[in-house]
Image: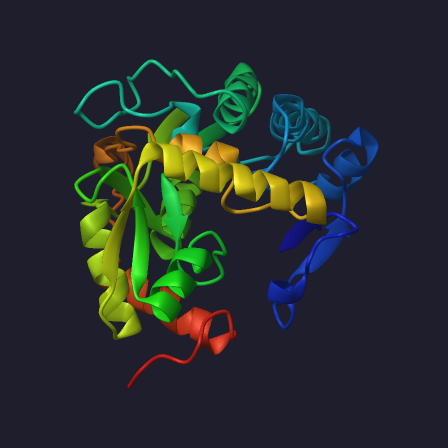
Amino acid sequence: MVCLVRRTSNLAWLEGLDVETRVAPLDDAEALAEAVAGADLVFHVAGLTRARTSDAYMTANTDGTRCLLGAVARSCPGLSRFVYVSSLSAVGPNPGPEPVDETTTPEPLPGYGASKRAAELAVLEHADALPVAIVRPPSVYGPRDPNFVTLFRTAQRLGIAPVIGGTAKPLSFVHVADLVEGLWLAASVPAAIGQVYFVGSGTHTWGEVIDALAAALGRRVRKLALPAIVARLVGELGELKWTLTGTPQIVCRRKVRDALQPRWTCTWAKAERELGYRPKVTLEEGMRQAAQWYASQGWIAPLRG
């Protein structure tokens, strides 16, 4: 197994694994072509999720994907599958109460979502020449994911969980283990070639998510509703901290904008029907796994009990 990395990549999670690392920036066509030469299976999981401008998202997520596709087309004559990890954001928030599916017309929000949709189109443009498949996960959570740490830490330290948009707002989630299963099915099932699939573990309200989080932490957590104006202010403070420190912030203007959308839900019935995809991790179990892993790494305090 080979992992393509940048010179600045954090390789901590690869230590002890039987993998070879090769340095190949996504904007270096020659390095990519050399790095992927002869590959049978390619998973494109790289992506920029925090940036200040739409151009930055497009450069990394869209142009980088095009460059990798070109390298694969040149150097992988025996390719069995190119699996691109996209996002629910490539379609955008629900236009109505029904969850989006693969037939929904994409209307992504500017920035990240628009760049992921443009990258999808680049992948599909190569469908005649390469055996491609696209997987669209919703919010991903579980061990090693840093995006939910702030929520866990605030709940554990202060006994509160900020809620944007109300506790009844529905959201789709996918646990990392279920996402990996979906990616493997997209890579191995013949029917997946040329197709796009949503995968998920469940759709839950924010209230249900916080209740599961509280159970995982072993403490009572109060739900704190944030008015939109307050949420936007918090996002602006995140932007200010980003400017002062140079460190991308989890809570920022784009994240708050996305959180203020009425709903982000999808259905993975197509993956179940065509790939045999079956999510296995419940919300309660997934939150427990995440809390235990965060605590084991010192990202949050030791759990009670």
